[in-house]
Image 1 (cartoon, helix red, strand yellow):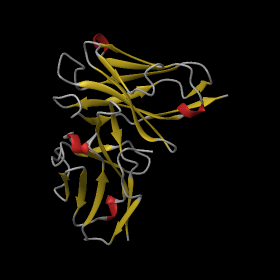
Image 2 (tube, rainbow over the protein chains, first blue to last red):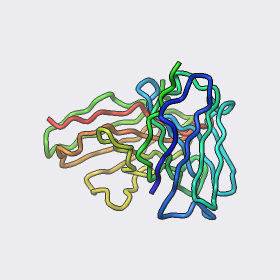
Image 3 (cartoon, helix red, strand yellow):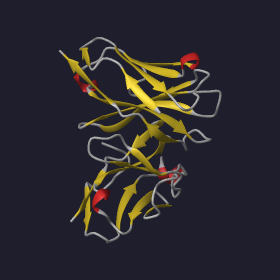
Image 4 (tube, each protein chain N blue to C red):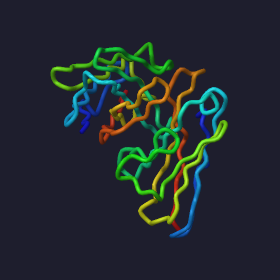
Length: 121
Length: 111
C-alpha cells in the first residue's frame, strides 16, 4: 500500500529527497496523517515527521531545521526533503500511515518496505 | 538514548509465555499517552502488533496482548512459536520532547 522511492546514495551536505506512493487508500480528505520514520543501528527507530492531506505538518524537534514534508493529493503521494545531510543521516527510511484520532495517540500502520539511503563523503 | 526502556533480549521455549516490558516516565506513558507495539522480522519493515495499549489489528493472533500501568507497558506472547523470533518495539508520545518516540527494541529468541 505504501512504497518509498528515491536515490539510494546522497552526497554529504546535499539534500535527501524521497517520495512515498500510496495505493489502495486515499491520502485524503480523511483524518489520517502520513509519516516518515527512519531506522539506523546507532539511533534505532526515529520518527521524522508527519503530514496530512491539507499539508499540516509536525516534525521531530531535532530535525526540524532541516526537514520539509509535502503532500500531492492529486497523485496520492507525499514527500520528504532533508537538507545538509551527513553520515549520521544514513538509515533505512520508511513511510507509513499515521493513524488515530488524536495527536499524541497515533500509531503507524501500515509501513512501506523501506529504502536504504547512504550518505557518502 | 531512548526515553522508553526495553530489555535488549528475551527468550523462551516453544509454547511458553514471555513478556516484554517498556518503561517510560511521567512525560510519556505516565502522562496518559497510549503505547503501541511493533514486530520486526529480519529484513522486513516493522508491523503493527498492538495499538492503543491493548488492541490487536485484524490478522494479529490473540497470542499477543498488551497492557499498560502507570509509567510502563508490557507485551505478552503466549504459546511462543519459532516464527515469533523478531525484534519488538514499543512506541508512544513524549510531551517534553514533543515527539513520537520508540523504545530501543527487544530481540526475542525461541530456544
